[in-house]
Image 1 (tube, rainbow, N blue to C red):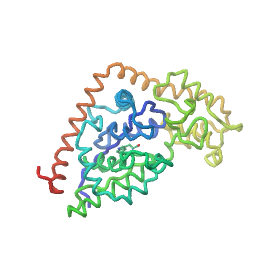
Image 2 (tube, protein in one colour):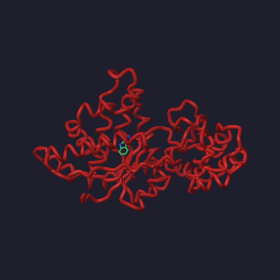
Image 3 (cartoon, helix red, strand yellow):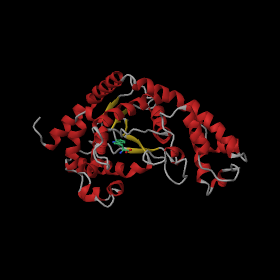
Image 4 (cartoon, rainbow, N blue to C red):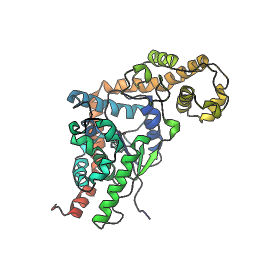
Length: 339
Ligand code: TRP
């Protein structure tokens, strides 16, 4: 039986465009979870240096780190209650990542599909950091002995690697149950938000078409326009869940409505059964603006005072370090370092 205290840890990379997928797929759940279990949420700025497009510009990393922190807060994560910090502010992440680099096997990392996708045909030109990205992610989690990790489907394999690393460390150093085996909290298919231009593709910050996504910083008119222009099919909305088969765009828009309204998909389908897309889109646009405008406004307000965001990050890092520091000390002793 595991004796570990429950702790949630998650993080997002600082990128310039957080979108509706990040909100419905992650942030909204984080906000709920913070009332159920202790949570730590970090902005993984060290991971941002692994970006395949080469180095991000330093000023972009800084700005995006603040913007992601602002999005956490604007979405409802309460920094007084839940530490919000940048990964690089807690040096123990990097320290543990090195030790884990020596625990993880090359063969394990060679199986990571995200690395294969991101490095593409030019593996030899990818940074070593991109390759060991999932090892740093394991350190992010285990440096706090976190037990629950809300992530999207695409991060499941990385989390399995974190469990393998935890288990191998526990075995090799004969410290059974030292690290918990962190569990993914997959925020199910219901929260998978797809592109507004193609219901088969995920809504993504890297899609060339800005019309494919709703950014958290979009103003009301932009949101409404993007929804009105969203791809649909010629049929009226389906009568039931079965009627969604082969209609990814209808499914995506109804799913977005359900997420924003906090209603089960079944109820939303019943609400709009047999209606035309045009009327539904008007209602969806109205709902999206009602829900997202306060977030965008709050993000803008916070971004105008970067000193305040930095204070919040530093204070979150201080709280996070009170947990990470003693764990890291233990680990150093365990592996034989003189402390
Ligand atoms: N790799 C994650 C992603 O791209 C981000 C991440 C880094 C993360 N460290 C983490 C998520 C630790 C959860 C826990 O989504």
